[in-house]
Image 1 (spheres, rainbow, N blue to C red):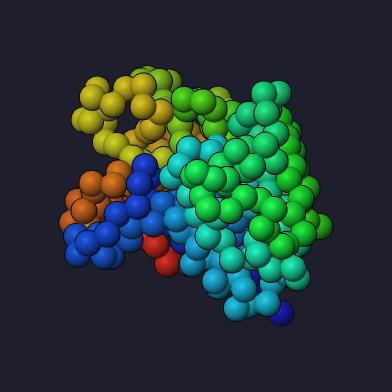
Image 2: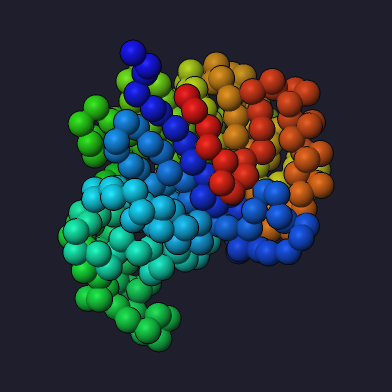
Length: 276
């Protein structure tokens, strides 16, 4: 019998702000949202603008239990939450997780502060799903569904951010976004999260040549992603959180350079599905 499906589907791969136009048609313009399919379970990592089409697909599939994990709550990673149709469906059991503000505020408070007038026309009371907001401390190991283990760790980003490692049936996926590396050093937390991973999804907002201009912005490069994957023995590397100004042609060139150095590297695109 075939192994149960373990897949990643990219619903949004941009950073900072959604973009549109002919120059972004192939890689897409939605901000961060990743769906992980482990058998009949569905996990969502981040709630950027890609969460809206993700919600439409989940509703059409008949899935009724969904976990959404936030890396952090900067706009580009949560802007899709109010437009996530399962929020308004009484049949849905939705668990919303966050840990980047551990000890300072709760996931529920973050959601209530974000989804309310005057920033949005309605507040969380309009949500009709069975909503369960959960908090964790970075470094915790989570078990959201039977057979699924999620390891967490703090990333170097203004205001805090959480990296995730999702393990299921002996396979693993790591999401490392958003994070800024220290020149000449490999982040020990990141190395632990990506150790021997089947797929690493990494913050490749900038190139090394651009980093001098953007030091302190909290992002990394495709070159650093390769160094980390090589040191950790990871198999594949998805370049992610593309700069909003990065055109299809520019991403083609970055992907070609990355593949020349690391055979498992590729640039993630909206709508792409990767089987593991």
